[in-house]
Image (cartoon, rainbow, N blue to C red; front, top):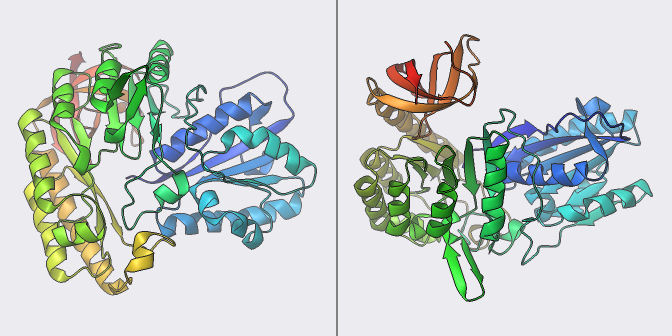
Length: 459
């Protein structure tokens, strides 16, 4: 899963309000979606955006614990905030999300300048906790919930382009992969009422958004039951895609053990469901997959890739890969490389294993692969994926793709960029087109990361 840092941007308001907030999000798309929920709660409680940290009354950092380097980035940022706190003692600093949930009171002890700790299920309590902080006390809420989905909150959309948006359809995870801290920081799986999801998609379309991504730790596990009827993820996806054919639909993340042919059929039956599936494999070795408690073998994963190719011949497939998990041998590593070559992934997110406290792996398996081996294996994985991504993009030269224009290219004001159905970034000359247009582009060249082409008309 991709990781990033982003500042919270609220809509512009002219009403004079007393407090200003600055929020940074560290981590994956789920954290980004959570920051939108926090944004809505704060807007309803008289907060305005701060242009930067120095002008803020409240600084919130929405954190990730899935890897150690994610937490270290937050720690580094906290050191920077310490000097701001010394200059402005009334500044309130809070930690949200998975790192808050994992470390709880320990964070308050280690980072004396933190005032507020709130886990992923405690965002509704922010107004009350901030009142507690204003009275001179530290405040904390890291209680996990069995039913909180924030379904009734209309999140402030923060993507900045007004075209693409994320929608959380469920929270929590119960897969308990050996290396993963998420089940302990986000709690049990629970799904949102499908009507609230459909309503949110309809509202976003009315507001001008043209692409939404349905989010869940494992979207395939989505399940809602009421009055004797039930709806699973394929049925939900079918409903959402049927709202408007001009609204593109993506989703993340699928778990290989739960990817069904029924779901692939739904994708095939809707042109506006993007033909791109993120299917984390983590390792190409069945032995390693068993140790990781992934719930499938190499053979099962291969069968799922074959099913995708059967139902969705033009589908792009991306993945996650971990190098150097506990006891990984050179043979295990070579099996990962061979699976990558066979699957020809279009792109991948690749990481070295870092032990996370209190996970199954931390309790049962020694972190015994030397760092130098982890680094070498990760380098080989990255180098191979660069070749695969470049070849995948070269295969697209000469093809026509419908691209949803998302904005102006960073390299040139005369070019737009967007993504095709396969989730590949496409750059093309602006000409008469604007953000939000569907543009047919003929691909003329590429790099490993980007397709470049000529617009030949709108869709």
